[in-house]
Image (cartoon, rainbow, N blue to C red; front, side):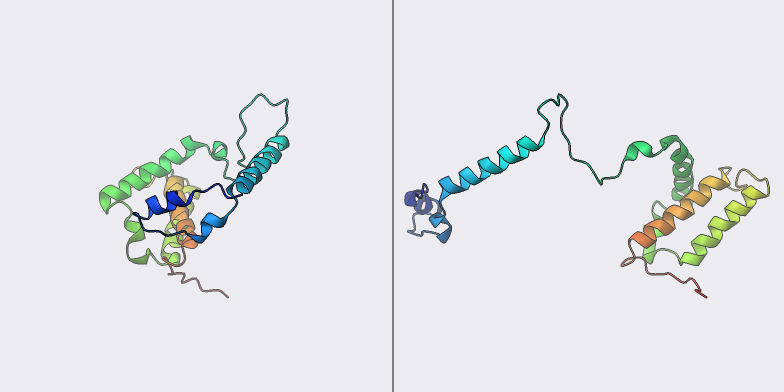
Amino acid sequence: MNSIKPEAHTEFWGGRNFIHPISKIDTVGWENHKTSVAISEYEKVSKTTTEAIKHDDGKPDWSLVPFEALEGMVKVLEFGAQKYAGWNWTTNGGFPYTRVLRSCLRHIFAYMRGEDNDPESGLSHIHHAMCNLLFISHYIGNKEKYNKDDRQVR
């Protein structure tokens, strides 16, 4: 039995006598269907659970990130924003991959030689390298916008 009243459609369509085909749906049947789905979903939850339920399987677990370790990288990003501009590394499709990778390696090798901090910024070489890896990761994740992969694959 259809529980939608034709006059509701007439009122909705500004007084015009128009009955949309959707009005032929058995809304009582639809409500019963929604109720049965809700009950079946409810039954999946343990009756003994006293905690709130949140289905977040497969989503990133940001609690695994040591945020204090990222603070140095953020300081390098701030230094770069002062020197060039914020997000400069994304301008015009970003840098060629090898330019970013060379910079990353220079910082890593300087650190390996015993130089903890970059002489220009005074910030950690490791944090500079992390920034470069962040840039490459962003480029790879957004290849349609950053397509300057110039690696020489041998």
